Length: 238
Image 1 (cartoon, helix red, strand yellow):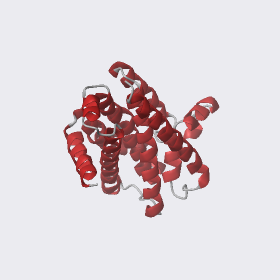
Image 2 (cartoon, one colour):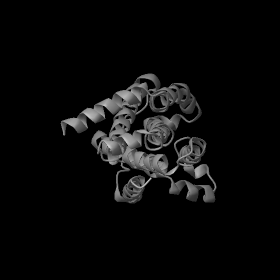
Image 3 (cartoon, helix red, strand yellow):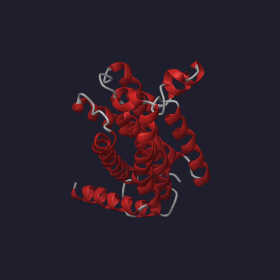
Image 4 (spheres, one colour):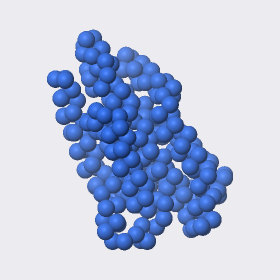
């Protein structure tokens, strides 16, 4: 157990030094928050009550879909995997430590946004903080599980970057975090329902924590865990 905790802490420190993960988990989301928070409120003052949720969805999606997969590709697509095998280390250890480390980084970034939003933009804090944090944890777990699939499945950096963008951009544009989803045509609304960002956003809204917004996220997470287990099992024979 102590060895596992040491691995998690070590991975957390390595992630801080990783330019891609540090930029996508902290720098870009926080800059976007600082620049766009005031713009959103000037255009849509009613967004004051949902600004925190919107910025958090953007931050988590970027870190999970764009930041985490390259780190996994670097581990499982290089000689690091051979080192694991040679020393009898379970292949799942790399994924688990990265998952936990990324979870801590994303949660920290979200807490920064949550603390700064009321001060800088007079944003309204969620009414029920326990349900909000539970919804946040669930959304981070689901997003990271999808990012883990990308990192384990795609072996080419260029293809990985393109695929991550194809998931990230619709997640932000069609989830209702940038503008009310009612403004979208019906066919785009339906497409937006496919991405977990929509359900995570709804789940974090006041009085949004209910089975109606939760079941799809549970389904996606369960399917992602099974997919990751299958992909890790295949790694043993490569």
